[in-house]
Image: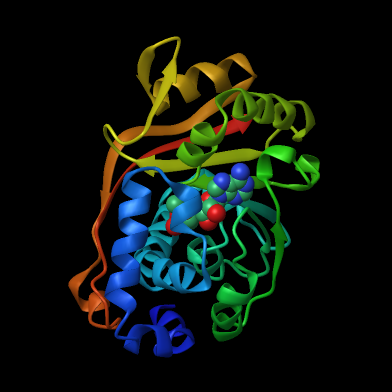
Length: 250
Ligand SMILES: C[S@@+](CC[C@H](N)C(=O)[O-])C[C@H]1O[C@@H](n2cnc3c(N)ncnc32)[C@H](O)[C@@H]1O
């Protein structure tokens, strides 16, 4: 999998401007200026080579570690990755045979992620649109993921995101899994009526109210890239500290 990233983006990895582009993306993400972070192919490529390989490793581990997710990713299952255009989910899911992957992303990832899907030998349906508009049929999916994206949805529109979750609830089939991963800690928060809540409190309340049960929840876990794996990629692979929620629709 790491080889696929390294081969697909050899030119980007060798680009002397890469570190500058990574810094620009990092700064924009820190300030939650997501539009700025993903507004050019150079920045999208910088994001892919800097963040997606480590995330792909972490997601592969997580999808295999939690039995309910692994079981749901059976052959012929349909998975929707909200905000999955940067390739990490695509790469992780390529480890599960015959899973059908649909990605919906606001940024124009398709031409940027294509070398990766080619290198992985996977086929993915990419919808370039705002997920909050729900330009897909939620009832088609066995698993829906929102990985390091939920924060962005709430930043764009809290009311819109709540409406989105309610509409998904109304349309998803019973048994559908919803997997949410975000940074652990203070970065992931939602403001309501002048009060700041950790995102997970807010999500737990909303999902429970909307008839989803908890399958798994943890507010802080680590994925640490094994050292021997790190040697297979020419850029530093970060460890990931994350909070995770897995809900099942009742
Ligand atoms: C921080 S990146 C995370 C990428 C990837 N999921 C990962 O884990 O590395 C967030 C992604 O969500 C996308 N995104 C943000 N708002 C969106 C929306 N309303 N609809 C669809 N995609 C959205 C962004 O374009 C970006 O690709």
